[in-house]
Image (cartoon, rainbow, N blue to C red; front, top):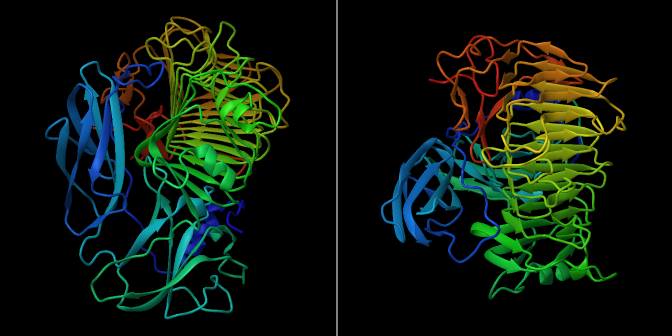
Length: 610
């Protein structure tokens, strides 16, 4: 069993960690929101900038406090910049066509991103994850391949003294010497663990995705995977990665030249690694379970449709639905770009979700009829991803994303969805919705209808988002709840610590269906319009055309020192066992950082920071 679906309670995980000696990984940080970037074009073409990282290789380690990163960029490049997500430091590289930079690191994991910008303002980015091992501070660390990870947060690495058969806390067998959580790299799809210094000696190290089931007071049947025996030398660091079980390689010169060829050979649980580059009109139906479909090579692999996707019964390459159709259970998509999806009924998608449980990470959907469409039972998770310019026609029937009824839970977090055409930036009919720490905007030229549409009601949490309606919006309502009915079993809406700006000049910020309940706490509402239409309880919100934001026109919604939102919020409390207090903040583009505060919570999506 590779993925436990049981959620880990905060109390149980605290008890688990308190039972052993633990040293966690470094903190998470990020940069400030940027202004309105150039809208995505119709598709990638030969004039667009490109960038490639030549060194270091992904997963490299160093014992020095900085690393030289080098590579090449193509196009009319005027500047190459870098950013380290771990330290929140940025800088400019030397050179353009061939560039290099020396980047300071912090102990542990560092995700380095380089961005090439051309004379027209277009950009291209590439990233690489590296590890700085500081002398005497880490003796055991490594990566866990995402194909093993349970994204509900139940992942941990156990280390035992000597060569033993791993057992749970409180079990009859070997007791772990230490346990640490497996944490996701900020803004990425990679996962790491790190122990503090261990005494020199022999150890057994084991990974589990079932830490939620480990009650230290009982003997639990925990499944460990990737168990290994290691020797930790005195004062040295050991890297032990938990790698994928089976990997199929896709790309020019690989065993499979295109993703469609790998789909025919794949087995349940495989990892499909797709080299960076463009794969035109490679239309694929993925039928296996627990696949991980991953772009590699520093930039996203681009799945580009250049023609109408036809429909022929029994022919996967003519499925009439989307560039990729996922029919298997538990599929993960990482580092992939989708564009150009069109079908005869004008309802095509970059990804058509026709199987339960899908995770989408660090992917880019643009210029499709729908970015993603579907959701058949189970959960849909979208994180660290971008959606732009999806939607066609005059009637708003296609959207940046459309999650179908029957989906149990939809989670959208740390993502950037913008410039939807006539349709919605976010639309979900799921029974439960978690819309957390995103940037959801029309900006200057976007013509979306609703920014967020929850047409069938449902249990919905909208927390910590930056939401903006542009002057060209096709609909005067920004967030709509239950606009088409109340077909879901629970009719509760919680809107907490968002910053919502109306640049349209009039309209409604929140439209809530009669007969449902809404609690609206600690939000900034800036711009003209009605705050709430329909039922709802308003608590500690700031309604003002001058709320004290750094730059409304530049979409920088951080608080200024003079903002009346500072220390003016109310503790939002918990409902249904879910803490409504925001714990992260959106970092542009498609990232996050921890939200920290002193004193009362600030109103809006950001805590003030000088």
